[in-house]
Structure formats: structure tokens, C-alpha cells
Length: 173
Image (cartoon, rainbow, N blue to C red; front, side, top):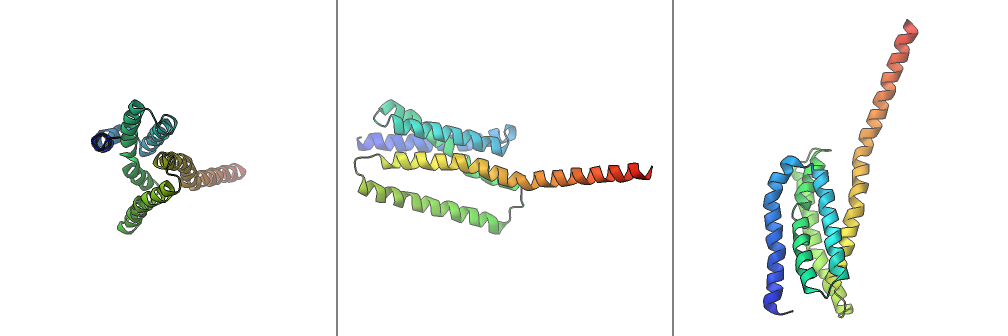
């Protein structure tokens, strides 16, 4: 790929990323954070799968990169909003999220560079993107289940308490 084409590809990624980050303000009024995360995960998996499958097709590369940029735009802010539904987010906990994201931002390029050195003929970055989107797609339902588990337990406990109250009231009659 020529340098100008690579620059255009980079621009299309960041352009769709910025546009969808701006549009997310309006989408956040209509969609729940969990819904936005699921949509982001689906779009990321599909676009990265297309990148791996059709890595030699220039048209697919441009379209999939644009979709990938759009799908990545609201993942982090939606994740923070989703977490706020289940817990209070303090400055300290928000700092941990930002530090974790920053460590991932530094670690992934290093891993890609290391793997690309070992496998120069493979599009390693595409495989790493695909594996990371699969991981995120599996991780979110697990996190959702863990986050809602205490709520389900509380509901069952509350229902049991209501049943006991009803039984004790009927025994007094």
C-alpha cells in the first residue's frame, strides 16, 4: 500500500471514530449503555472478521476499517455508563479504568510489533484485532451476568421474605 493510501485508511478510521463519538451523544438518549456495548461488540466482530477473511481486498479493507472505527468509538464511554448503573463511580475507580485502558493502549502495539517480527508474512494486526473483539464479545456477557447476579439474589431473597410474611399473616388468622 502506498503511503498516501495508508494515510487515507488511517484518516477514515479516525474520521468514523470521531463522527460516531459525536453521534453517540444522541444515541445515548435513546439506547441503554448495555445495548450500545452489544451493538459495538457485534460491529467490531463482524468488521474484524471481514478484515481477516478478505485481507487482500482493498474495498473490504476500507469499508471494514470504517465500520471498525465507528464500532470502537463508544465502547469505553458506554462501558463507564454501564458500570455506573451497578455501582458508584468515584474519582479513584475512574482513574483505575483510565489507567487500565492506557496500559492496554500501550501493550497491544508492543505485542503486535513482537508478533509481526516473528511472522512477517501474516497480517498480525488484523488477527490481534479479531481475537480482542472475540474476547470482548465473550467478556461482556460474563460481566453482565456477574453484575446482575447480586440483583437476582436480592430479588429471590426479597420474594422469599414476602412469602414468609404472607405465611405468617395467614397463620395468625
